[in-house]
Length: 371
Image (tube, rainbow, N blue to C red; front, side, top):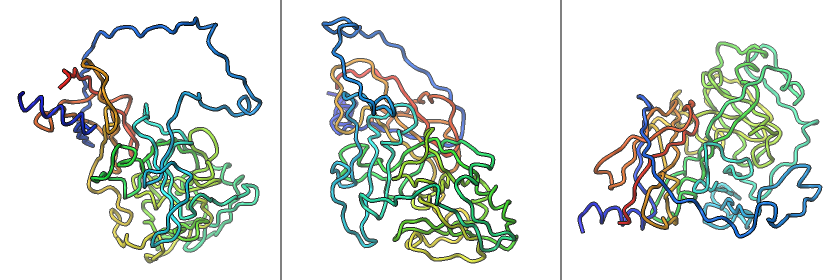
């Protein structure tokens, strides 16, 4: 047995293949074509398939097929919804998205990762009563209702949110455990720059403090120039209002910055001229523009979602190796995949147009010989 075959066998046993992503360069991918046998037809015709009773609730909102089993898990691998654990910061819960089952680039709202110090409980906020105060170094402090926010020009953008803990270690068995605290979604809201202009942001303001309703990790300090660049005061996600776990009725989306700085249940923004130390910033004491909230200065990241940990290929033949790549510094322009432990690399095909600070789906056709 040659070293190449041995390497492939070990990679598949471990459930992972190598992948590299770059944030610059051209995206020119080649896809190998393969003939595959048609799947066997079911024993019944389409009009004879078993029927599922439709309840009024299903008609009103809709549910997924009962054959689809993807669920989120907690960071310790338990199904989401179990009792949370205590940490140094208090009651904390990280719920990880099942990236190994994902297709495309968007994680469904019901499967999007979330983290909270409130465990299984989130604030129950009446949007008709909720307000957002913007004050500090502004000429015209304002209290905005949710109706006020919707009167401003809106933006809709795709961005990922990622926890700093989203990295693999030896105990992780699949990509949900290793990279499940990163999700990509379509966010809709008003740019924070628009609100600051409405309030008359003063030139001496260099930072802003964003406060949410969460008791322990409820405030963050961020650079004003980040606010004026691309921060969104978001009230919708994936075409519907934010879900409670995602900050209903309004939250910050700070593209490319560490997840903890995307303040949920947003209620107060204060423009200041000095860095303010808050609970969110403990352990993140970086005062310059690019590293105050990490900013992903270490470059792009990527992960194989198929075939990956715990997945098995049924037989030799053609398969599309697929995964996700992303960067906090811009759009991914090129992805390379290795099937021999990094000895050689092949350019993958990027699916769709890469967007800044958003997930990009890639694929590479691979003829597995069974070794």
